[in-house]
Amino acid sequence: HSSCSQNLFLKDRYGASQLVIFVNNLQGVQSCFFNATYTISLENSFNTVGSGSSASLTTLLGNIELGNQIIPFDFSDDISGTVLQPDTVYDGTPLKLDVVIDLTVISNNQVSTFITAISPSGFVCSDIDTLNFVSGLAPPPSIPTRSPTSSPTTSPAPTPDPEETACALRPRIVCQVLNGGGLLTCDNIVPPPNQECTSGVPISELDFIYRGGGCTNNVLNCVGGGANTDQVWITIESVTRGLLWNRVTKRDTIMSLRGIDNQMEVTISTVRDNRPDTELLRYDILTNCTATAGLTLKDRYGALELAEFTIRDGDIVVANAAYADVLITYDIELKDNTAIKAQITS
Image (cartoon, rainbow, N blue to C red; front, side, top):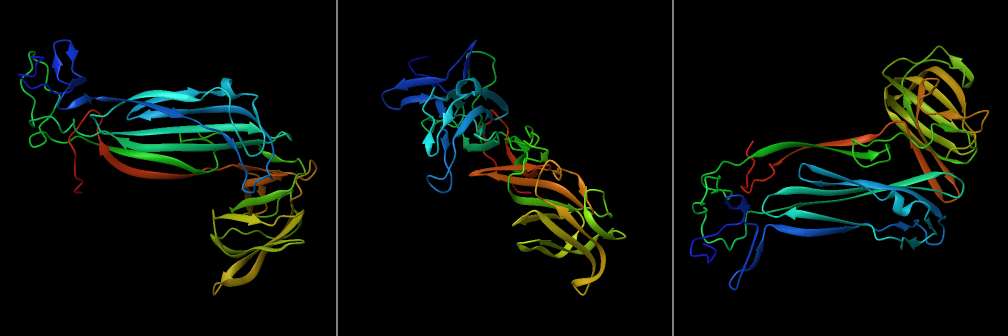
């Protein structure tokens, strides 16, 4: 009944065919699908205009998530070798992705991109970007009745009655990389660009973790028997720039230190009345990052483990992290290919 003397519904099956679009004078165009085009733009920018450095692009990859479907893409061949000057945008081959989104089912859509480049001094820099949105509703409201009429075949009716059909839910766990790892999702965490700091360039930040322990052969002037309690008072002082850390510190705490010069002194004491008491360990760490006195990720320096170092070469900042901070979110969503909305009650 293509004359619509019998109701037609999007996604109804008629033998081996399925209705996905119809057009009439009253309702106009009614379609199940939307053709979407994602465009990736690249820009070499810094916080202060005119203070950046050129960057040679090396890698551009990522993936598109359409519900449970994951579509990877790789534009590395298109952008590799392109040099972006400071405060300029990429104007080479258009970086576009065409996808078809089914609007009759509720689904989560996400596009994730990851780019790397190399500075004139050979340092690797990278960045990420994501776009996330939810698409899909029940079939268009121009459908005149709640339930589809009988199909000429024995195929199941695709348009459910919301008053008689149970909803279909799916628990979802999302893992996002907040710091370190350098990539897109928890499935794509990559190692740091540099494992050792031996280039001699200035350090803008050091992250240590209190693990406990005693003197090691890579520290200087070490005095004391060791620090192995779960809670201590740690004082870290830079030789020329003053106090970097001075507080109660629990085991496995990450200490982010800024204002780094060539050497720092670490003092670890017991805690009494929320103040330092008996000194347990004291030593110096060389932090000039030379070939003879470098720093290595995950090495122990006395009672501390090096977790991250950030170096600066001119305006290029490169973070090298041994650990990735991740955020895990627990969620519930509708299953793909369902148009029945649901209200979570427990």
